[in-house]
Length: 332
Ligand code: ATP
Ligand code: LTN
Image (tube, rainbow, N blue to C red; front, side, top):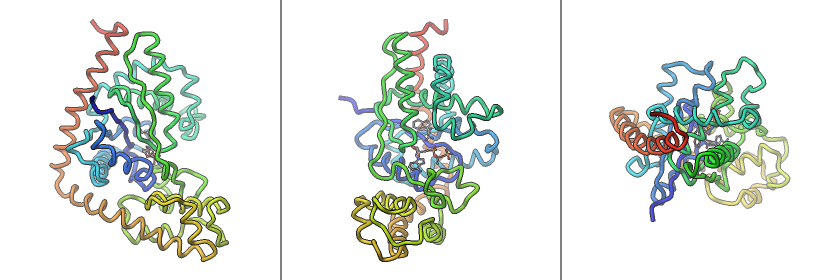
C-alpha cells in the first residue's frame, strides 16, 4: 500500500519561534519516514499582510524558513521541501476554489477577524487566505495536515470546500484531516500569556517569543522575564496563565506531563522552574542553531534542495489541478 500523504507549511513572516517548532516543525520531523511528506514555505500567504512586506526581507525570510525546516531535523532527502510560489498550481486552484467559497464562510474565520477583518481597507487576500491554504493541501491529495491548534478551523474549511466541489463535479479532491500534537499545540506569548505566541507580534515586541535562532543569552533573558505572578503556585490547574504556559512549554520539550512537572516546583519560587526550563529549551535549540549556521554558510546547498523540491511539487500538483479543471469543464 502506498504511504499516506502529509502536507504542511509556515509563512515567511519573521523569525520562527518555539510555538512554530513545538506546534508544527518537530512533529513534521517525526513523519518523514512513515509518510510521503511535502513541506512548503508559504510565501504567497505571507503577502496577505502587504504592509509587512519588504522585498529584501521577504526573500531572506523564505530562505531562512526553508533552512530552519532542515535545521529542525526534517531530512530533505526524504521530504519534499519547496516554496509555494515556485508551484503556480497553488494560485490557479486557489482562484477556482475562491469562486466556490461562500463569503460568509470566510468572514467567520477567527484568523481573519483577529488580523483586522473589520477594517474595510484591508487586502482581500486576508479574506481569501484560507482558500489558498485549501489549495495548498488539496493539490497534494494530503491525508494529514500537521499543524498547531490555531489552524484547525482552516483545515475544516478545506474539507468543506473539497466536499462542495466534489458534490458538484465528482470525486476530485481527497479529504484531509488535521493532526494536532497533544503537547505544544498552543504556546502563548511570554509577555502576554492570554495571546498565542506569534511571529508577527514578536517583530514589535522582543520579549513576546523565543526565536529558534535566539542566542542562549536571549533565551535565558526572555524566560526569566516571562510574565508570571507574585505567588509560588505551580499546580497546573490552579496556576496563573503565565505559569501554565511555562509548564506547557516545559512538557512539550521533555515529553513529561505538565501537571507532574508542576508538582515538582510548587511552593519553591518560580526561579527554579525557569532555570530548568531554560536548560530544556537550550538542549533542543543548540543543535538546531548549529545546523542552521552550517546550512546558511553555503547557499548552493539550499538552492539545490528547493529546486528539487519545486520539481517534485509541480509534478504532483499539476496532476490534481488538471483533474479539477477537467471535472469542471475549464480549458479547451
Ligand atoms: P503569524 O504571526 O505571521 O501569523 P505564526 O507565528 O502564527 O505567524 P504561522 O506561520 O501562522 O505562525 O504558523 C506555522 C505553524 O506553527 C502552524 O502549524 C501553526 O499552527 C503553528 N503555530 C503558530 N503559532 C503557534 C503557537 N503559538 N503554538 C503552537 N503552534 C503554533
Ligand atoms: N495558515 C497556516 C500556514 C499554511 C498552512 C498551509 C498550514 C498555509 N498553507 C497548508 C498547513 C497546510 C498557518 O500556520 N498560519
